[in-house]
Length: 182
Ligand code: IMP
Image (cartoon, rainbow, N blue to C red):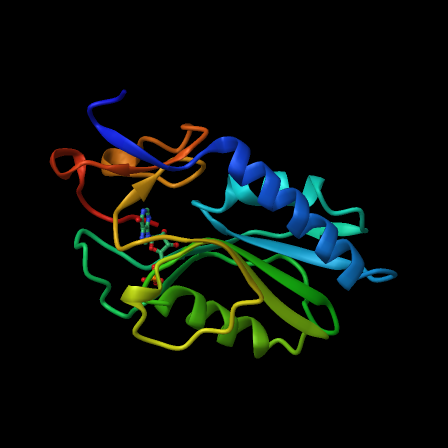
């Protein structure tokens, strides 16, 4: 047992859900191309596994969005730290996000990408903390609903930017819990 954290979602549970989501998306977009857009940095690992579970012509673009500064409470302001490199007009856009908390980040990104007139736009989210939602956000799929705990691992970082390389998703105990990051 680890003194610093509790495992909320294990690596095998994650890969099983991603396998199923990949199959579902393969059927949904059959015959079409998809532009997969992971939101950096937390969604990079989820996206890397998801695209390998999708048997489709896929392109990958990255968006960087920072929703939290030094504080644990979102200001509601989202800062774009990296933008896509080609027009999304008439493309099937699949946004890949690590976690939806207040919903502010994803709502902002959805509005931004919608303004570029894609053919379709959907969001798939690894973790959902519905108890913290302040804005309504359209989610095509969420893989795991979790309680209001600060989680790290499988791409999500914690204090100091560490913990992303843990294969499981874990809740940090009080003493290690700290600020949110991008
Ligand atoms: P929202 O805008 O409040 O929905 O926040 C979403 C962003 O906050 C995510 O993309 C994460 O980067 C970050 N975030 C929220 N909760 C957590 C958490 O428990 N662990 C790590 N990052 C988190």
